View 1 (cartoon, rainbow, N blue to C red):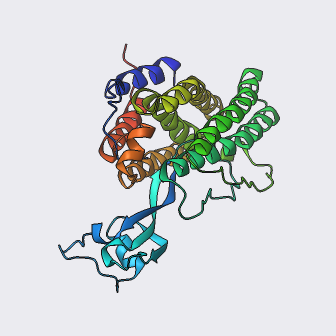
View 2: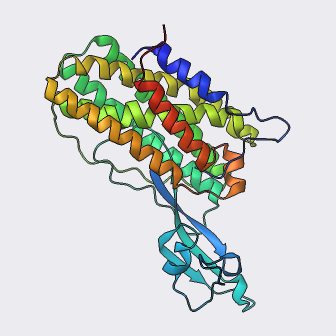
View 3: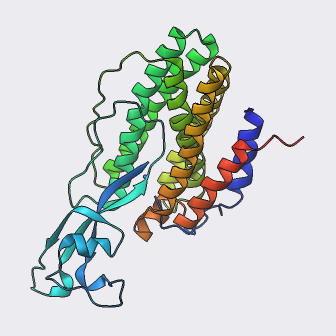
Length: 317
């Protein structure tokens, strides 16, 4: 895979993203690997799939299922004893992309009631922070497997860049009322070149590549100027990280057996399919999505599918 193919794919797909000007941003209801966050709905706003009206005697699990959420959930009675004003808190999925390390133990969970936009940025900060040990481990493993020094150096440089990214996203989270969750990663164990290649194919070639595309999308589309500026500084680094993933892939595949290469390719194909499913099932409040600049589920699914097609198709002459 050449840098030209990746950059050409990004340039084409980003043509779908209107540039945010004077507060007019890309249409969006989507967001941060399938992760989840707590979102509040008023009981009176929930409509049942059969057209009926939600009632206070329904369980929170049943109510949340109507809005695409689930447990953990809770119902908080309204102070004025108005049933329609009861608060229904649900865990809803949303999508943050990046390189997650094997052994990531913390899930980035946040307390109930944290503002949704702050929660989104806190989850993104948690994932950026998780990328630091992921790249540090990758650099050490590349060196132990005899990879070219340029790949080892690039992985170490990427770890340093992810430290800055985590700080940038944490600052946005704090600005919007959320603290970054504590990061916990289990001690790493030595693994084979095939295991390294499998993780790189899924977390780097798929998840991180899509995350790099999303960073550029947000830098164009976010209504919040501070978000556009922050993602504008992160996006070029994330593109280089995606390019590094594909460079590592090319090097590693050349040293694996035919059977091992087939397993890596199969894992990558399944990761593209899983990404598309995650994109389609993600939810964010409309205002949060507009401020953060994330694409709608329909657009995100199209981006995932077309990016996968572009990265597996022969390079045009």
